[in-house]
Length: 238
Ligand SMILES: C[S@@+](CC[C@H](N)C(=O)[O-])C[C@H]1O[C@@H](n2cnc3c(N)ncnc32)[C@H](O)[C@@H]1O
Image (cartoon, rainbow, N blue to C red; front, side):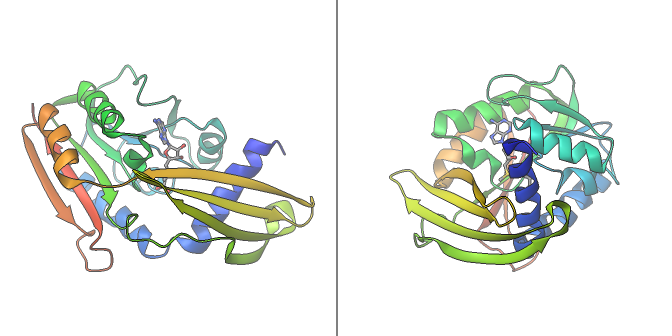
């Protein structure tokens, strides 16, 4: 297995272990798609398909991510049209009625200008009355930094090895960075996942969204009280 494939596998393994309440977003997006009945929907930052696959059971879904290995895993699970591209730089040559950017993917932006690129690019491929939904998390600023915090240890059948997953995180001026280590016993090696999330500033995010959309509604949580620090931007119209 190449390093990229191994990392994509570890990412899936992590999701199975740790994303409990986070999966609340799936039903939320499924309900929206069921009401909106989009001709075509796009999931941006689809990863290995945690949201895109269940959404594809209620709508015609395409998936976009900049990581080819994650998309390859997604396509092994379900035949969904995938685009491997950086959404800040290019967009599919298609029109969508619904675009979902889940799981704080928009906070991968290094600054607010890049957030605006995500929003502007989404607008450019949305139909006239299409809807963009993205979620952001406001709890990065209050999270405590960690050093080699053990998250879980488990046996992974697919690679016939025990995996030990631990996390080191750091607070930066505008963002929080996370390094997740996956120690793979069988190969006597570790692979590392690095992610940095921009802190959420509601006024700035709203301002960006307003420059490209007429109607902005911000909802908290996924229609329940589990995660009040998750904010869902519903953006419509020019
Ligand atoms: C936090 S993960 C979310 C993955 C999956 N949607 C989920 O909910 O579990 C963010 C994903 O967005 C992708 N991503 C981040 N910035 C991107 C960009 N500018 N263009 C395309 N994909 C991006 C990453 O490769 C990663 O797979």
